Amino acid sequence: MFIDSHCHLDRIDLAPFENDFGVFIKEAENQKIEQMLCIGIDMPAYPALYELVKPYSHISLSVGVHPNVTEGEEVKLERLIELAEDEKVIAVGETGLDYFRSEGDLQWQVERFKNHIQAAKTVNKPLIIHTREAGQDSLDILEAENAQQVGGIIHCFTEDWDYAKRALDLGFYISFSGIVTFKNAVQIQEVAQKIPADRYLIETDSPYLAPTPFRGKPNYPTYVRYVAEKIAELRGEAVETVAAQSTANFKQLFGLVG
Image (cartoon, rainbow, N blue to C red; front, side):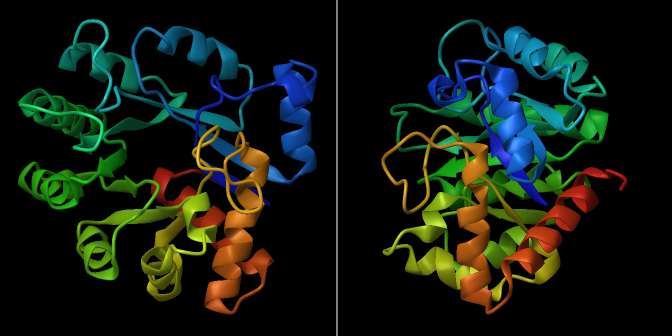
């Protein structure tokens, strides 16, 4: 059984599934996807996202505003805490810093990030961290804000082993996406080889970042198997071992039973 620790189910193309979310869910079950964590990235879309996944006990939610989102009013800390207290929500984010897509004075990103960390600590739920070309600043803020109190996930990991060690020391898990299957992803593959067995997760970030052999095409949670297969190859293990270990790690992080 597999777990997709990071996907955007309100953004996937349902055309291959008769444009029916229920048909997609059945196919995910057929592909042995046991659990999915659907990630919130903005407030206007969140109510519809919540209603979409509400009927499914094996789909959990995170709530947050992505560091690149600039539309709409800034979410207030109190509102973030209120939404994060819902039992369907198991994490806060995705949040973090992104210096690739945003330019200029990014103090607003920093303040948003700090608010998410505060919300996570208030509700005692882990953080989902997005960082792009801002790795050291992201870790510095996590340390300064005592994010180790709740821990979380460095999602779609693209840094090196030294960075991974620092994140692990902060109590964070490392999540590998389809990027780990790319031929030129040597640095990420090294981390996948070295990381302690009880500290890694797998994800798709669907509909983005489809793994080889679907690179450049829409991504789906059903493709998380390809991430697991690559990690198994790198670690010299059976894919069943990686599936079981990443599932156990997910449940450990989020305090899920069974």
